[in-house]
Amino acid sequence: MCSETGSRYTGMLLLPLAIAAIIANLLLYFPNGQVLEPAKITDLVWFFHGFLGAGLLVMVPALMLLRGGGGGCCVHRRGMLFPVLLAIQGTMGAVYCVVISSLGLLSGPFCDTGSGNYTYPFRNDSLEGNYLFNQPTWATCQEPEHIVLWNVVLFSILLGIGVVEAVLCLSQVISGLCDVYCGTCIRKGQVKENPQVSGGLDLANVNLQSSEKLGKKAPDFLTRVGLYEGNSVANFIHFARIKIDISSK
Image (cartoon, rainbow, N blue to C red):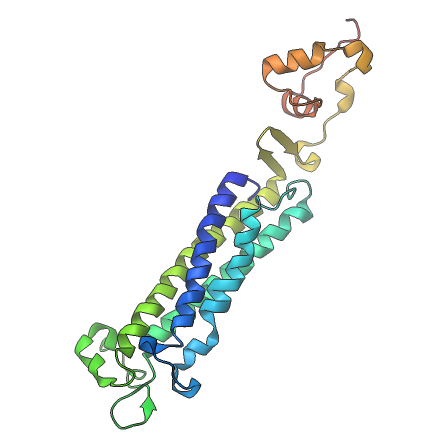
């Protein structure tokens, strides 16, 4: 999860998916573009699986990933746990959306079959004779018009969004747990290592004199080998682990 490029790409995918889930959930409240009484809307729509599950709960980790994978999350293990917890939150929200969307597809819409009373005509169907595989039965619902198609399309979209979000968030959970376990982070122009994993680095092995004695020799040398950046030799020390004796120079 400390890999900024991969995290940002994941965030760029999750954010529009979360927005699309919110929009799809909103459209379920207006069957075929009609404004109905709340009592005439399919009950599963009120579980807010698009607003809350695949929407807000996923949007939070998406925004965190877009900001660069948690900034300095790699410095401490406790810091690395926070992005993992957000990714778990996103995974749970996406799975919640998948479950409710699946139930919405299987149970069918709340509609008027012609008697003037709203009911669920497909809720007791068996899986084999389900209305999803028998399109002529969709005419059973007369009001609102095209309510079956409306529900099938939107619940299917939310189901697909939830599956994709769950996979992306779960990948971030696995990546973050690997970072916590390994304790390392490689970022652009930077190498950080957890001393618990490396076994500790004896800085006594590096004998550097004062900056007056060093002059520009060490920076020039480190620049040539491609390990020096800025005014710090920490990258060279941690990465190469070689002993430099410049005192005689």
